[in-house]
Length: 113
Length: 112
Image (cartoon, rainbow over all chains, first blue to last red):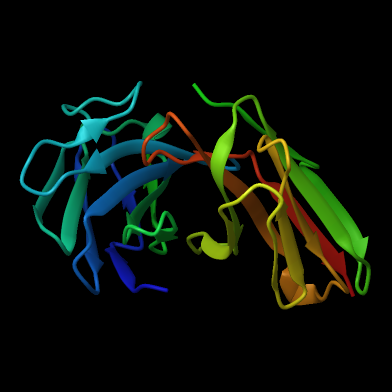
């Protein structure tokens, strides 16, 4: 198992604003990922957070909307920019220690008004 | 992209009953993972499968990696109220690098 801390755990935001979510892992890991889970839906990969380089985004997600930082092997941030109500979701940080098993944080539940 | 079909979408069962859910893919997978998500929480890994035919148990949970490598099932025996939650399968295809594809989830409800 792993300890993955995310904050904020939840927030209510105004349309047009941006919010940065932080993810802290209890040990150094190579692979960190950000997922989105829309209400009542499954998980969709947003991007792979690469340490020391630009994140790798999946189809449908772009850096301008979801900028990601990965300054070291235990920490990453995801920013949801210029939010609209459609961005209301749970955003999940996850990590893989190289075993192929993905571990998740508790998620950050965003509500955009 | 990869497609994962998970069924059933939801189940409402009596406490003590056994439960079975499954996932099928359009591609050959080299890894199957099963997760449970409680309300307000992130998904928690239950079982990981890495070889075709592999059968693995975790307490009352049993999961199998299908021989064809395109399917997996999860069984829960003697269900209890705390089994309530959403169960997700996830798989990794041979040509997908580190990317996991998630099934749509099975919402389990247990009546005491």
